[in-house]
Length: 219
Image 1 (cartoon, rainbow, N blue to C red):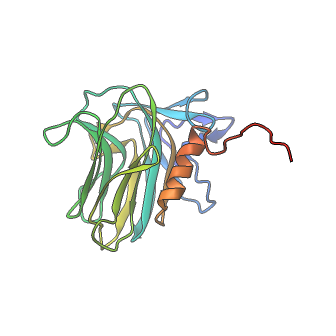
Image 2: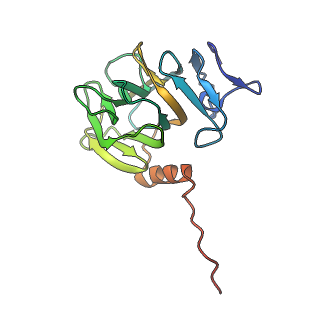
Image 3: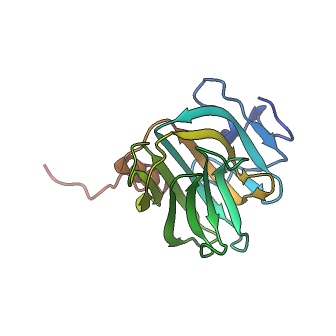
């Protein structure tokens, strides 16, 4: 793994920078996101400083069907651009996934915007200082197949990118001057469309609500 100021725990990169697939998609860590072992939804998370912390993923090519998901803990609502998983450029096939608060949105709205494509915006204004699970899916088939999810529920949909999604992505940054301020955990990028039931289960497993136990029943 190529790194710039990388955080190491026990001689290895922390979980959100490790390629768990075994395919060797190594990442570049810019600056020094702080490892927070007591935070996150699954045994620790990375804290980004909003100044220059980022994880630059390898170019994963272009996929017609895509799911991008993450858990976030947001510190400040005054930043106009709060990128979750995005891109360094604004070009065909690129989707910028972030919280926004500017002339086109209210502070804390979740936005997934595709260049020369669709734009889906949540009606939910996200509070600071709490964990939230978010995701978007694109299946490349056209109308109403670009979907946005918050805490396991679909909140918006729009027209999909029929030419595919460019997966040359950055965690915690976009362009060259916009950075995430807060904590990110369990960032997942899949070359398939996760169905609503799968996304709901991912959210419920993160809040330990996937399995419910009732009182013992007599035979």
